[in-house]
Length: 179
Image (cartoon, rainbow, N blue to C red; front, side, top):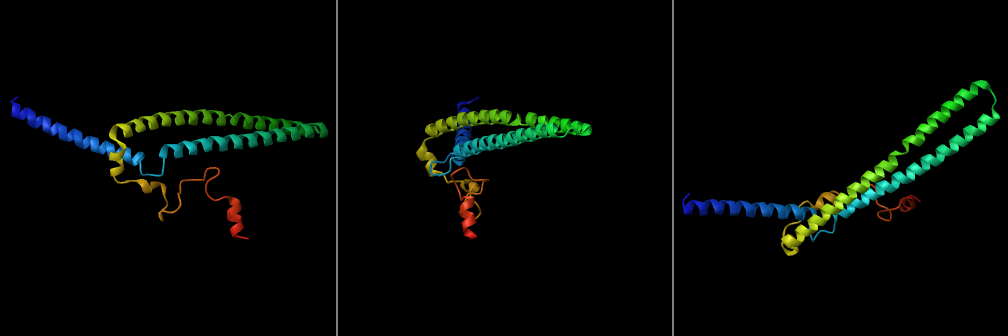
Protein backbone atom coordinates (compact mmCIF):
# COMPACT_ATOMS: atom_id res chain seq x y z
CA UNK A 1 0.00 0.00 0.00
CA UNK A 2 1.42 3.37 -0.94
CA UNK A 3 2.35 5.74 1.84
CA UNK A 4 -0.35 8.30 0.96
CA UNK A 5 -3.05 5.60 1.25
CA UNK A 6 -1.67 4.56 4.63
CA UNK A 7 -1.90 8.14 5.86
CA UNK A 8 -5.45 8.45 4.53
CA UNK A 9 -6.47 5.18 6.23
CA UNK A 10 -4.76 6.26 9.45
CA UNK A 11 -6.51 9.65 9.30
CA UNK A 12 -9.91 7.96 8.90
CA UNK A 13 -9.23 5.65 11.84
CA UNK A 14 -8.01 8.50 14.06
CA UNK A 15 -11.20 10.47 13.27
CA UNK A 16 -13.31 7.39 14.10
CA UNK A 17 -11.41 6.90 17.35
CA UNK A 18 -11.89 10.58 18.25
CA UNK A 19 -15.65 10.36 17.52
CA UNK A 20 -15.89 7.20 19.60
CA UNK A 21 -14.09 8.85 22.52
CA UNK A 22 -16.46 11.84 22.29
CA UNK A 23 -19.41 9.43 22.47
CA UNK A 24 -17.87 7.72 25.54
CA UNK A 25 -17.40 11.12 27.21
CA UNK A 26 -21.07 12.00 26.64
CA UNK A 27 -22.20 8.62 27.99
CA UNK A 28 -20.01 8.96 31.10
CA UNK A 29 -21.25 12.53 31.61
CA UNK A 30 -24.87 11.36 31.35
CA UNK A 31 -24.25 8.93 34.21
CA UNK A 32 -21.79 10.87 36.36
CA UNK A 33 -21.75 14.53 35.35
CA UNK A 34 -19.66 16.73 37.68
CA UNK A 35 -22.28 19.52 37.58
CA UNK A 36 -25.17 17.19 38.41
CA UNK A 37 -26.46 17.14 41.96
CA UNK A 38 -27.78 13.62 41.39
CA UNK A 39 -25.54 10.65 42.15
CA UNK A 40 -27.29 7.85 40.29
CA UNK A 41 -25.28 5.11 41.94
CA UNK A 42 -25.76 6.30 45.49
CA UNK A 43 -29.44 6.87 44.85
CA UNK A 44 -29.92 3.37 43.46
CA UNK A 45 -27.86 1.80 46.24
CA UNK A 46 -29.92 3.72 48.83
CA UNK A 47 -33.16 2.55 47.21
CA UNK A 48 -31.94 -1.07 47.17
CA UNK A 49 -30.86 -0.86 50.81
CA UNK A 50 -34.30 0.56 51.65
CA UNK A 51 -35.87 -2.46 49.92
CA UNK A 52 -33.78 -4.79 52.07
CA UNK A 53 -34.78 -2.92 55.24
CA UNK A 54 -38.48 -2.87 54.30
CA UNK A 55 -38.53 -6.60 53.50
CA UNK A 56 -36.75 -7.35 56.79
CA UNK A 57 -39.32 -5.34 58.72
CA UNK A 58 -42.27 -6.87 56.83
CA UNK A 59 -40.89 -10.38 57.30
CA UNK A 60 -40.39 -9.78 61.01
CA UNK A 61 -44.01 -8.58 61.34
CA UNK A 62 -45.30 -11.58 59.37
CA UNK A 63 -43.30 -14.04 61.46
CA UNK A 64 -44.32 -12.45 64.79
CA UNK A 65 -47.98 -12.45 63.76
CA UNK A 66 -47.73 -16.05 62.57
CA UNK A 67 -46.18 -17.07 65.90
CA UNK A 68 -49.10 -15.37 67.64
CA UNK A 69 -51.55 -17.33 65.45
CA UNK A 70 -49.76 -20.55 66.37
CA UNK A 71 -50.10 -19.63 70.06
CA UNK A 72 -53.83 -19.08 69.64
CA UNK A 73 -54.17 -22.44 67.85
CA UNK A 74 -52.32 -24.17 70.70
CA UNK A 75 -54.59 -22.46 73.25
CA UNK A 76 -57.70 -23.49 71.30
CA UNK A 77 -56.47 -27.09 71.08
CA UNK A 78 -56.27 -27.13 74.87
CA UNK A 79 -59.72 -25.61 75.38
CA UNK A 80 -61.69 -27.27 72.60
CA UNK A 81 -61.74 -31.02 72.94
CA UNK A 82 -64.15 -31.61 70.07
CA UNK A 83 -62.65 -34.42 67.96
CA UNK A 84 -63.51 -32.81 64.60
CA UNK A 85 -61.75 -29.57 65.54
CA UNK A 86 -58.37 -31.28 65.84
CA UNK A 87 -58.20 -31.81 62.06
CA UNK A 88 -58.83 -28.10 61.47
CA UNK A 89 -56.22 -27.06 64.03
CA UNK A 90 -53.70 -29.31 62.27
CA UNK A 91 -54.55 -27.65 58.92
CA UNK A 92 -54.05 -24.20 60.45
CA UNK A 93 -50.69 -25.32 61.87
CA UNK A 94 -49.66 -26.78 58.50
CA UNK A 95 -50.55 -23.59 56.61
CA UNK A 96 -48.89 -21.42 59.24
CA UNK A 97 -45.69 -23.43 58.88
CA UNK A 98 -45.83 -22.74 55.12
CA UNK A 99 -45.92 -19.01 55.91
CA UNK A 100 -42.77 -19.43 58.03
CA UNK A 101 -41.05 -21.26 55.19
CA UNK A 102 -42.09 -18.64 52.63
CA UNK A 103 -40.55 -15.92 54.78
CA UNK A 104 -37.11 -17.24 53.88
CA UNK A 105 -37.45 -15.15 50.68
CA UNK A 106 -36.25 -12.15 52.67
CA UNK A 107 -32.87 -13.70 53.41
CA UNK A 108 -32.29 -14.62 49.77
CA UNK A 109 -33.55 -11.25 48.55
CA UNK A 110 -31.24 -9.41 50.94
CA UNK A 111 -28.23 -11.46 49.82
CA UNK A 112 -28.96 -10.88 46.13
CA UNK A 113 -29.51 -7.16 46.57
CA UNK A 114 -26.25 -6.91 48.56
CA UNK A 115 -24.43 -8.54 45.62
CA UNK A 116 -26.01 -6.04 43.22
CA UNK A 117 -24.93 -3.12 45.42
CA UNK A 118 -21.34 -4.48 45.50
CA UNK A 119 -21.32 -4.74 41.68
CA UNK A 120 -22.72 -1.22 41.39
CA UNK A 121 -19.94 0.04 43.65
CA UNK A 122 -17.37 -1.62 41.36
CA UNK A 123 -18.98 -0.02 38.31
CA UNK A 124 -19.07 3.35 40.05
CA UNK A 125 -15.36 2.98 40.85
CA UNK A 126 -14.64 2.27 37.18
CA UNK A 127 -16.68 5.32 36.16
CA UNK A 128 -14.82 7.47 38.67
CA UNK A 129 -11.58 6.27 37.08
CA UNK A 130 -12.93 7.20 33.64
CA UNK A 131 -13.85 10.65 34.91
CA UNK A 132 -10.27 11.09 36.13
CA UNK A 133 -8.86 9.83 32.81
CA UNK A 134 -11.20 11.93 30.68
CA UNK A 135 -10.84 14.92 32.96
CA UNK A 136 -13.51 16.46 35.12
CA UNK A 137 -13.16 19.83 33.38
CA UNK A 138 -13.84 18.21 30.01
CA UNK A 139 -16.96 16.55 31.36
CA UNK A 140 -18.17 19.78 32.99
CA UNK A 141 -18.08 21.42 29.58
CA UNK A 142 -20.54 18.86 28.20
CA UNK A 143 -24.27 19.54 28.50
CA UNK A 144 -26.22 17.85 31.28
CA UNK A 145 -28.10 15.52 28.93
CA UNK A 146 -30.63 13.25 30.59
CA UNK A 147 -30.35 15.10 33.89
CA UNK A 148 -34.10 15.60 33.97
CA UNK A 149 -34.90 11.90 34.04
CA UNK A 150 -34.92 12.00 37.82
CA UNK A 151 -37.29 14.94 38.07
CA UNK A 152 -41.00 15.38 37.60
CA UNK A 153 -42.32 17.20 34.57
CA UNK A 154 -42.42 20.49 36.41
CA UNK A 155 -38.78 20.02 37.48
CA UNK A 156 -39.64 20.55 41.11
CA UNK A 157 -39.95 17.30 43.04
CA UNK A 158 -38.07 14.07 42.34
CA UNK A 159 -40.59 11.39 41.44
CA UNK A 160 -38.80 8.08 41.74
CA UNK A 161 -40.75 5.95 44.15
CA UNK A 162 -41.26 6.06 47.88
CA UNK A 163 -39.01 8.47 49.73
CA UNK A 164 -36.12 7.11 51.70
CA UNK A 165 -36.23 7.41 55.46
CA UNK A 166 -35.64 11.01 56.49
CA UNK A 167 -36.36 12.38 53.00
CA UNK A 168 -39.45 13.89 51.48
CA UNK A 169 -42.66 14.76 53.26
CA UNK A 170 -43.79 12.66 56.22
CA UNK A 171 -47.31 11.28 56.56
CA UNK A 172 -47.64 13.42 59.68
CA UNK A 173 -46.93 16.57 57.62
CA UNK A 174 -49.52 15.54 55.05
CA UNK A 175 -52.10 14.86 57.77
CA UNK A 176 -51.52 18.37 59.20
CA UNK A 177 -52.58 19.84 55.85
CA UNK A 178 -56.05 18.37 56.34
CA UNK A 179 -56.51 19.54 59.94
